[in-house]
Image (tube, helix red, strand yellow):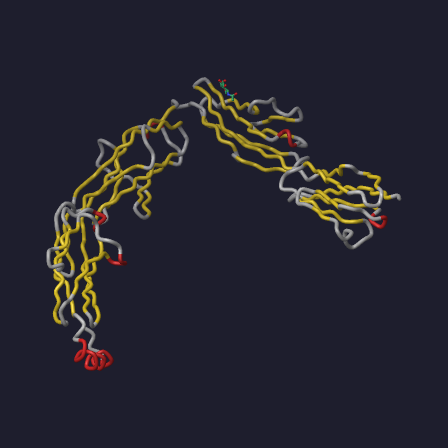
Amino acid sequence: MDSSPGVLILCSLLCSVSGQAPVVSVEPRAATVRQGESASFRCQVGSGAPPVQLLWKRANNQALPDNAKIGPDGSVLTVAKARPENHGQYRCMASNSAGRSTAMAVLNVKYAPKVRLTRAGPLHVRMGESVSVDCRASGRPRPTTTWKRQGSTLQLVTKEANDVNTIQWPAVHPDDSGVYICQAENSEGVAEVKIDIIVEGQPGAPVASVGATEMTVVEGHTITMSCQASGSPLPVITWSKLRAPLPWKHTVSGGVLTLNGVGRQDSGQYICNATNMHGYSEAYTQMEVESPPYATSLPDQVRLQPGDALSLQCLAHGSHPIQFEWSRGGRVSLPPGAETTNDGRLRKAHVKLSDAGTYKCVATNHIGSSEVLARVIIKA
Ligand SMILES: *[C@@H]1O[C@H](CO)[C@@H](O)[C@H](O)[C@H]1NC(C)=O
């Protein structure tokens, strides 16, 4: 196939002694079938010194699918009852003692669309909440997907990306209750899938929402949590804490909960409850209180004799992770032979008189740090 001068020279040298490398082509080069139909490709050897061996493979050297058969002389590849995954390139490789060459064939397998939803119905949604449903379609040629409401021919406005068509409501209304159909269509057929959406809560029922569903705050600060509710008549808002009473230093006004000087024990889930004659609606804020470390040393004073083992443990409470660092008062470094660990331990197997002094542990987390001193007294 290649007629560049280099190949011609190579052939004129080699062809006379060991014959000529095969030249192959595939007929047809491309075939398009429907799913379930069959396709055949013939690999033809134009020239080349016999014997020529033929080998069919999928492109990138994968094995042939189990529904592919090769004819008795090795030249005809038949894909019987083609499946969608048979789509792609096939390669015929011809080789003899002089070399080898390959030719490609492309099989297109068309198939009717398949559709599925990423969530199962029926979907019960409270009025005012947001909902979205993804419809995923496959098929060849690539199907077009649309969302419709049962009983209507109107195509709904949806968001399409890749093979996913998403229908969404930022806030559902009772009128949105109904059966929705995602339909996928290509030249091979049509497929559809339905989902029932049931909007709960009657007109006027409360719908509560909080300003933040999650918050992380630092110990000692004053924080506020807001809650808003729609409904008619205007709902009454109350705040509570999951499995615990509200902290005693709290106030509620106009739906806003204020907590003064929060502590770690105030972490947890806070519930806003909006109530009127038609029902109630709850919304949640998860709050985590973080605190700087508070370090202690165990022991904070120790009396040893030369040769004794020294072991000090620095402890800290506060938000994790906490790092510990030991140092020695008035010195650049710890005595030689002293070891520290990530969990705050300082050790030395055999102390000397010169190891006496004051040691300092600094515990640090992402909020702050705290230090503690330990006295080491050594007497012979
Ligand atoms: C919210 O209020 C309703 C009605 O008063 C009540 O049944 C429900 O238990 C309350 N929820 C919480 C978390 O207090």
